[in-house]
Image 1: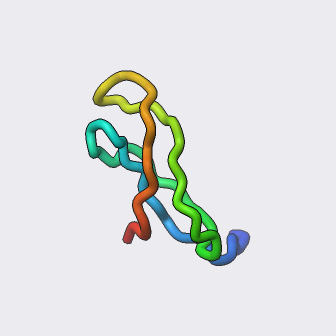
Image 2: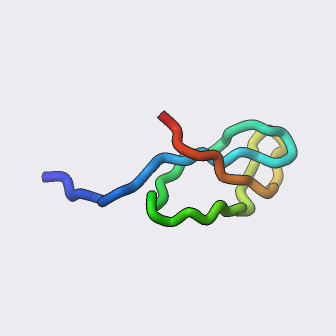
Image 3: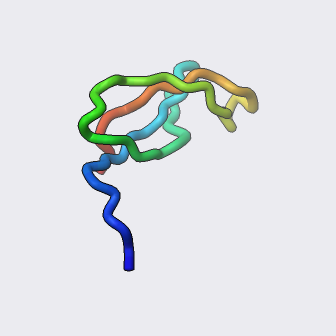
Length: 57
């Protein structure tokens, strides 16, 4: 039986240097803060800043 995760939405993480979406993650719908995180970009083959993109379908 699957457990309910509450009000979660899917968001994409987009590389600031290339503009390519590399990651998809979940976040709390009630938390309205946008965030940036340093993740690996396979196109550039190095770690770069990624910004959040709202509500994927």
